[in-house]
Amino acid sequence: MDTGHVSLWFLFKLFLRIGSTAFGGFMALIAIVQSNVVERYKLLSHEEMLDGVSLATVLPGPVAVNTIAYVGHRLRGVPGALVCTVAVILPAFLLMLALSVAYLNWGQLPVVSKVFMGFIPAVTAIILMAAWNMGRKAIKSVYEGLIALAAAVVMVWHGGFMVSLAIIVLSGVAGWLLFRQPNAAVAKQAASPAKSKGTSLHAVAAAPVVMAVSFWSLNAGLLLKLFATFAGMSLFLFGGGYVFIPLIQDTVVTAHAWLNKQEFIDAIAMSQIMPGPIVLSTVFIGYKVAGVLGALAATLGIFLPPGILMVIASHVLDRIKQSPVIKAMLRGIRPAVIGMIVSAVVLVGMSAQHQWPSLVIFAGALFAQVKFKLDVVWIIPSAGLLGLLLY
Figure 1 (cartoon, rainbow, N blue to C red):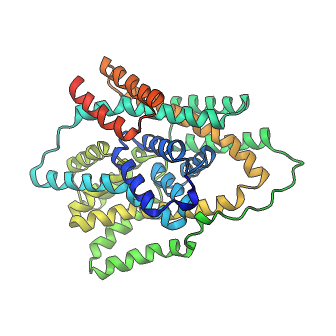
Figure 2: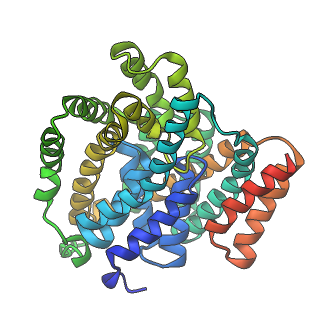
Figure 3: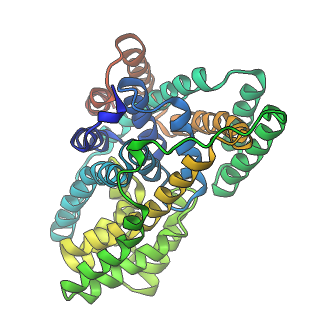
C-alpha cells in the first residue's frame, strides 16, 4: 500500500479494529500493530516499527499507546497520531465505561475469567510471531543476535523500567562501538517525509491549553482537577501500567479519597480484562467522581501529555536518524527491543494456565498465523471462545 495515500479514515478503522482485539497487555498490542502495520499493509518497515518501540520505552506513558502515536505520526503527522491513538483507546474506553456503570449500579463484575484464560496462550503465540517477523528482518549478524539474546535473558531474569532503560542505553552504546563507520561522510539530512508534516508541532503544544479551555467552558472545576491529577501522574508512568498501580492507588484512595480500597482493586481487575492498557482504570475512577465527562477527563489526562512528548520526540528522531552515529546506535537498539519482545513471550506464556487447553490454543493460534496468515482479529475471539469451552 502506498503510505503517501493512507487516509485518516483508513487509519481510524484499522486502529479501531486493533483496539477491539488487543487483549493481553502492552506487548500484545504492539505485536498486533506490527502484524497489521508492517506485515499485512506494509505501511512501515520493521526498522521504523522497532525505532518507535525503542523511543516509547524510554519516554513516560503507556508504551503501546506511545508506539501507536509514533506510527500515526510517521504516516500522517499530528492528525495521524491523534486519530490512531483515539481509535485504539476507544473500544476499551467504551467497554470499561459500560462495566463501570454496571458495577457502580449493581456491584457485580461480569464472569469472564474463562474467556480471558483462553486469550493468554493465543496472545503468547501472537507476540512470538511478531518477534520472529521482526527478528528475521532486523538481526543481520552474530553481534545483533547476541544483543537480542542478552536483552531477552536479562528481561526474563529481572525486568522493570530501570532494566529496560539500561538495556536500551547499553545496546545503543554497543551499536555505536560495533557498527559505526568512522570514515563515512555524514549523510545529507533527509527531508522529513510529507506524511509526517501534516500539522505543525505548535498544534501539539497547544493541545493542553485547548483541553483546559474546553473543560473550563463546562464550568467543571472537578473535571479540571481530574485532568490535572492524571496528567501530572502520567509524566511519572515509566515501565508499564503495573509499576503505576501504587502511585495511582496512593493518589485516588489515600490523597483524594475518590475510591475506597475495594473499588480500586475492582477497577484494576476490570482494566486487566480490557483490550487495552491497565491504566484505563482511569475510566472507572473518573466515572465514579464525575460521570461520563469525568471518565473522559481522567483518560485524556493519562494519555495526552505522554502522547505530546512522543510526537515531539518522533519529530526529532526523523531529523537526526540519518546521522551515521545514530544509525549505528539504532542498529544496536533494534535487536535489543526484539529480545525484550521475546522475553514477553516467556513471561506472558508463564501466566497462562498450565493445562492442556493452553497448549492447544497456543499451537492453534501459531498454526493459524504461519499456515493461513489469519488476521489476529479472528484469532483472539476464537481463543476466548475455546477458553470458555475447554477450561
